[in-house]
Image 1 (cartoon, rainbow, N blue to C red):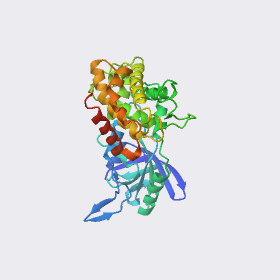
Image 2 (tube, rainbow, N blue to C red):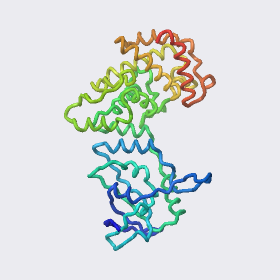
Image 3 (cartoon, helix red, strand yellow):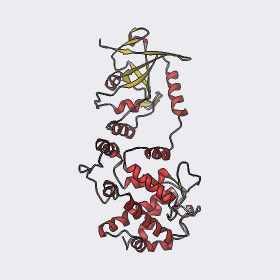
Length: 360
């Protein structure tokens, strides 16, 4: 029988004793099982955990490629007395068995390490002993129902404090310029954290589709690693090759050309403001809310591709390309396109593209 010895700190709480320790991810994987909700013979078996979300695991695996990845919060598990070989005040010796631990909280983090070897990475682990299933379920439920989700806009704002000039940081700076520039068609209408104005669209909603036009989200930590490895000089990103028709702003980002990026978008939004003046910044219209914004950004991709190829992205260029949309002026409402959501956004985009077929 193979065993593992863990140095521990004992905590005493109302529920009982908790053993705090550290463990290698590979050891935790080898010793863990997850009690998931599942279907067996047409009957639902009520396990503790939710089904594993593969996209969340992939996100964690991408994060683990970061040069400064960290998980400072603990994985919470339960073990049984039968797996404890020896115990004293400072050490817990456990049998290494694929059922030694039942994961109560942290299954996605643990799964993210599967197949990944990180020599310098240890995980903080909180171990309960001999908890009943209902107690484990209650801990899981309490942890996951009481947590307050971090506002996506706050997450983005925190990026501004970074010394590393990521694409996120560039696009947040652009959003700030649109909100505070008195000449901007978006002036005081983006919900910036700490701003005294209410705004129409959140920072996160404004920035997200701009990032999707800059780089693949899955490569964020690869880009960040490249930046961290070249802190004295902005890297050339010569090994990063993206489709220029899809990632329109990547080449501008590579040059740190925030001014040109802002100007191109400024010209586009300003032309829409002129053509759709009855809808622009009208609270009764969808145009500047997330639904309409996503539609006009998709449209921007179509029009801007032509502009990039022709080397022409001026206000006059966009005004000429978009002028047929004037027939929609004052009609971009929830009554015509639905109140919100992807369906409403796609309907609006399809209508705009149909009108512009002859120009783009």
